[in-house]
Image (tube, rainbow, N blue to C red; front, side, top):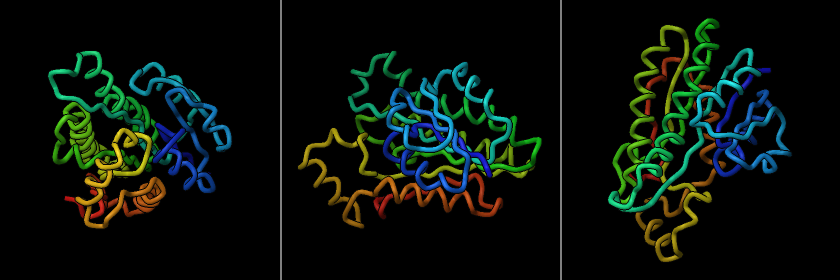
Length: 227
């Protein structure tokens, strides 16, 4: 059975991806601090800070080979830039961007000798276009997009595809801070007329994992026609 590592796997999109892959892959699932939410999922479970390289290195001690890496862990922060403290900035960048470096670095060490593997990074349309009052999140996801394109060029000669899925508004806990009027206004801007679901994002990740190697280095937007 092939092996897949998913970060941010306890809730929302990560959870939906784990559900989608569980019958085809041996799973390694990472969450920040909600191990109990993954107790019904198969595979090995880990809890820790994905932005901490030492923690990720310990996880990879359990992994002899890896076929699919899905970098899904993320956190959002909403405020004007003047109110973002240095510690909060570091937290957002570490969780959304440094984590992708941490896992990709170690995954590449396993994939390159085998000339096989796929890396899929969960990004955001805000990494493409920026969002007011989300400068830290937008910067981090923009970094994920640039990292994806760069790493794809490095790893393509070794038979490894690297792509990112830039999601629009998905109905997860990350977006629960919106009031009902704000949600309605947001949905009015989306041509398909609704938010996306975690299951739709998981389906896209699954299909992307099955695409030919020639599809690599792409930032694929999935936003209901928003942009």
